[in-house]
Length: 384
Image 1 (spheres, helix red, strand yellow):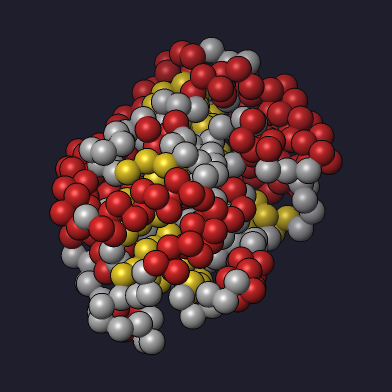
Image 2: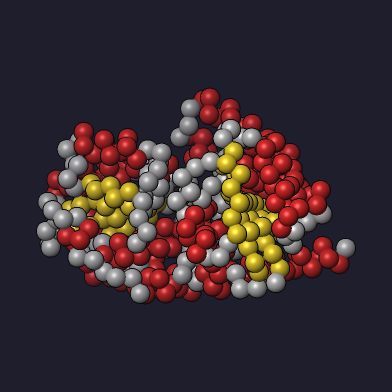
């Protein structure tokens, strides 16, 4: 058995963290060690433990703390003697690049987003843009220390090649995936089990993205406010937590929709929630490979999705979902009205989306591909 060491910033509930968890759960011929660099809630800790991963927490309190991270990672590598290290998220990538090469171990990085795209810059202040530019420079200066990068979508490969200054030969495409059986076996709730004051005739729209501005919460609330005046039994279910959770919960209250926009917080029953709702919204401004959209596909829930490239890479407007212009609340409301008014179209789209999702995003097949990639890289180092 080979030993893979994963280094990640935290075990919070986010797309990158869930993707690493899915890999750890489904590796068949590798033992796993997971190093968590920074202090945090680590809501997925028990899930990683259940997956059999050996966990190390560095508990770095500083915003960066690269020196401390290097010191702690060296200790773990010396103790565990892994065959390969795989890093995910910016700060862990930097710590890994500054540590692993001295051990003459293969180092794999992760491309999970178009981090420095115009959409990201448009959402931050001038001061934050300066910081982003500094991060981009540090990323580029250290990028060649990684032997290989795994990208979660085709759409983000070329932008990252430009940002990092690396060759295309160093990037392999392996998309995110999910356990299909978890959705097949998921319980379907009654409407009142989710929202006690909702009647049986209620129509539920659900979004399960992190509650932050870049996920499109401004336009989702604006669109829902317009739709709520037309459809009296309409509810918006928000499953998830995030930096802007309280802000958007208060905003829903300010516009008089606190009884119809329901913030559930972090949930561990996402397959059941998705299957129990009538429509799925995804309004993000930028992503790498949106795992929540994969979840929507596998739940057979009709979807309205933003027109960002990682979505359009696998989904066609009018085939697997209806697509709206990212950031456009009016267009989101328009596409939602169509599906509310035409349930048969929703069933047709959801069925097609499930067929596509089950073919492309079976986590067991994807992790098998990733495991083979690990072995090839390990073998190349051994041959040296």
